[in-house]
Length: 117
Image 1 (cartoon, helix red, strand yellow):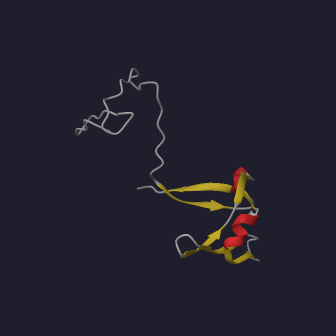
Image 2 (tube, helix red, strand yellow):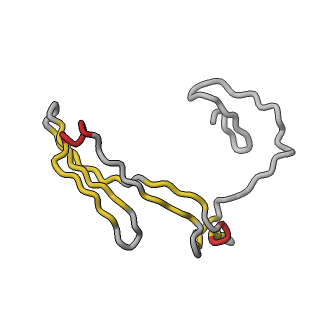
């Protein structure tokens, strides 16, 4: 955003760039205000989620000091713990990874809670 005043502003495609010419006055545009979202309610299976651990390659496995896959019994989430050594810099690092995907399940089971203020 550039050239901002109390009532107007212009936009630039790049930081420090010139203003973009906007040819539409916005009269045919509709806006939805989402700032009043206070939370959500999930019932049934509105979101479907699957976890798929990605095992380390042979090259990475050679650098691992410790590697474990842990499954959370309550959620089924599979987490991978990796402790790896970097011989070139004489450093170690630890990671916890989760590889997952999701899809919409029962759309009617997901509702927004909107604030009245």
